[in-house]
Length: 531
Image (cartoon, rainbow, N blue to C red):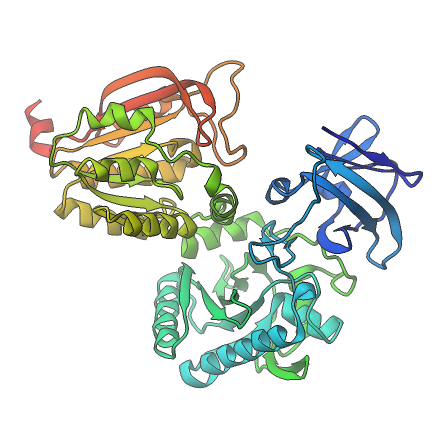
């Protein structure tokens, strides 16, 4: 059921999103029953429809939008432009956008659902700031790098003297003395080791970005990002500044070091030498104007370089983590039809790698229950942890690890292990999640893992065709041409032994017409030469 309300001011709220009629303020603040939930800029976030601009609900919110609540839309100065009780979905019960402990959630600037500082009490905020201060002290005094507070925390300190209410974490950066990516990565790994020795819980995000997971007393782990910054000369020898978080361009070294000091909620922090110059570099010339819906517009060439130098390609990682955290309970736990098709082709003592296992690991657990040794790998850390917990609970012979096919180092590490311990490779609903570069890494992994032991690669994926529905989750999985997959496998030295098109099911177990099933192998070099 879709029940909407339209005010003379020109807003309509429905299951589809927020329809803005006519002209509107550039930034809108949307609250539900008085709780801040989402900031939007219609001209940027919406699309033209009959009657105005429709801004769709963020995907991370849709599971909450079933029931009734008072929706308020205001401008940044707090002037209420729209306020009505709205019924969405079935209209039954109350809409409540909270986590499992009842804490209010909102959409942050990168589209994730999180607890903002506005919804954090003063005691917890003090713990976050104290942790950030100690992280910076370790970076500067123990490790010896030029570290400084940056991004939202720096913006809040300079513009308002406090944390931004709509922010959700703190970010620090350090200026590396190195200009070669290999040296920058080596330095970052050394920093990670020292931070672990100092007792911090650390999560590596890329070759130049780690997260400190700071436990606070309300039970959550707050992220303190540690980003590398560095200069690399351009073709004319002029220094170009790069800072993870995808920033790149011209910024004077004197704007960063020697660091200055700023005060935030009574805590002193090291800051760039010229904070205003850094903020203009990050947020543009209008950085002093509040905009909680702000989105970065990074130079594509700089993003490509940072991806290639330090990061591999992790564009969808946060969205997959969000999907598994919010929809994991909706996924089918019984093995797929594809798994029952594959197991008939496996030797009794076969070892299997379930690639892209998801948060349920349904097929990997099925193989394990049938007596196979299984290694389950996935892009999402949330999925890896969920599968590991399930395997431990059911005492299954299953190992769960992270694999990032967009990163060569991650692919080669697993490939080297499998070259010494041959496994068959199994991947359902994976191909449609990968871009060309990540598929290329999958073929590298297959060659390394399968050639020594004569194993097989089993794939199932949504195939292209006319007038076909998209597989779910929409935006994260797409259809792929089976002929393209076969050509790429053969170009990588593989042999497609079997390919068929059947009707199947998508990741959410909904019927899905036209699904490709494929079995491939990588003959040994001697066999290939003999043929």
